[in-house]
Length: 263
Image (tube, rainbow, N blue to C red):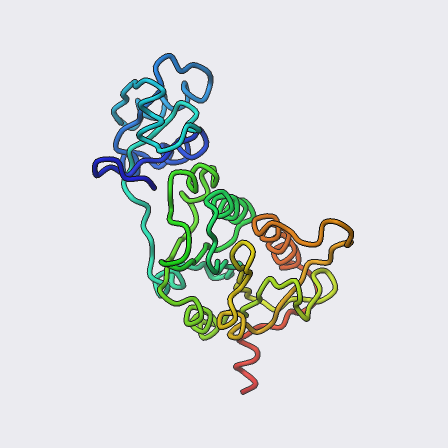
């Protein structure tokens, strides 16, 4: 999120409305572009009135400066920061069913990170972990692209992704790397459960030491031709959907707990 004179702000219709749903514990003030009309603005005003959140009208150019983007859609909110958990707290926050979690190794594009978080929230993933360095921060552009996803997903940041992979394995997850040269083929190989899906940054993919700590790699089959690879946010959606949709299948799944039981 952007800091403007000590303020954390988010912008965009979906992001702001989702934050307003959480009330004054999340939103300090709402800023609306002067003359902003339409149902989203009406909903925002209704939510602020219900929660007792102050509303201020600003010129659109002032909102652009505040949000650090012209794509604010006429709604900007001054917010309390989203809690960023430690990895230990993140793992403790996971529900008993242990849905898949995401380990994002160096995503640089805020729109990609936001799109991944949006998809993760929509599909019911358990949250996302990404590094404190060499990766995009939780900027207004990320929150806007996430379209409310950051309001429900547990989020954590770590100093060392390779160690984070080892930690989630110790906690019982199988670390499965999205890898165009992975030994498993999505749709042909049944993936173990619970899954920690490890995805690399744009261009470079999962870094060598992080990949080395993963249990396996899985690749998405592509038809070839001109398009030989997928955007990381698109790949995340395909992989997550496959993992989650097969979770309720009739075939028994290989689990980390069962492996420990054999040891």
